[in-house]
Length: 586
Image 1 (spheres, one colour):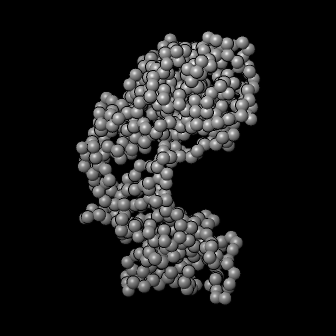
Image 2 (cartoon, one colour):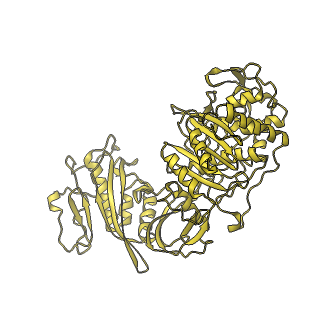
């Protein structure tokens, strides 16, 4: 930590010859004209001049005092503001990483004339404001933002040091991210809806990450010219195979069935983010498939519901007409959540193809069904005596599916999902980053749980809108936001169409559920060319399950989820039904 001395705050004022000032709790620490620092640290009340005095062999421990926190924060901020990067880095618990980041702040981000103003300490955390000037090839702009640091004890000697994190430099930096000023990585893009109107976050708040993604992918292809900007250049993900998930939810049961599986966390590379535009570029134009009317309606619906996400698409073509979220994360495209009983659409197609179920044939629906050591049950432990498979599907009977697990191979559901519904192959190319669903091969109880949207099955509204679209048409059409003709990309296809028997019966199952099953109330008045499926998925740590709903009407399909929404018929159902009604003009 070096030598330190007690200083009366009243003596910290310096002459007007100082070139740079650090404002710390009302005291000014300034560089003198000769370049030397008159004051390096400012001690608060209770700080000791002989803190860490010579001869103390034991490693300091225990809670940090207010003086220690202020002293450590001041030493770091003073050195950073002065430009003595090595000294600032040495005041942290990771000198190498801190030195790299602080050097990049000057050399890569091109920030000069830095002033750091310390805010009010809150325990071991010290907020501060960063002010400076971003300067690049004769173009300058002021930069101001707030961030914070936390003081901890160094492992080696227990001295107070700054807990190094990239967010100390900027609150939006994560591990491996960099601040860079220069010509924009990609030119700006003027994204258009299908009618030629401009898509902006002011009009459509949910589209922030989508517009960032469109710029990153199509900026150089849309004919624009890059400007100069300060931006965050994101690090590549640690595991490129784990793409497109929020990685936060762990769903282990649906429709009150019992399960113990957890979610596999996946991560996709976030888009680079512009923080400050020094000079404007010339945007290129990029047309999308979004419907302005449906996008506006979707935004309004999710804004009125906490943690809601929805997608609307056209089954005959795969065009995405709307996508909206009530949170900042794009759950609609990148979420990875257990889909609950909406997965029974895929499972039903499998059972029909295997000859294990038929819409009008009697099918077991007991209160309980065990497999692989787990005991599964229906919502409220209901049962259907001598009922048909159609009745079980419409009422979302879990045991009707669990009872068939022993007759299936471990990979049966995985193959049906991949080969017929185009899921889980990580090959969708919709125009921005997306998660394509996951239906991993499992065995024993988790395999059975997958049949009812549990186990390792993970989906999002885009995936489930695609699933109900495939059920409607009998052929998988990969959803897309930007036409493949724009960049010549190849859309994903399924290995085979749905069998004629599965298509006919599955459409009947979905129609009956919309007319007389769990989806009837939400879909009231939308028939006759319609079909729907509800679902709910309990999540560890949540009082209420996630509510799912997916449906079609005519040549429109939609799916939505409301996290902690309860039953899908009551939470996501009204959102999906309202959008289908709006899109069909009725």
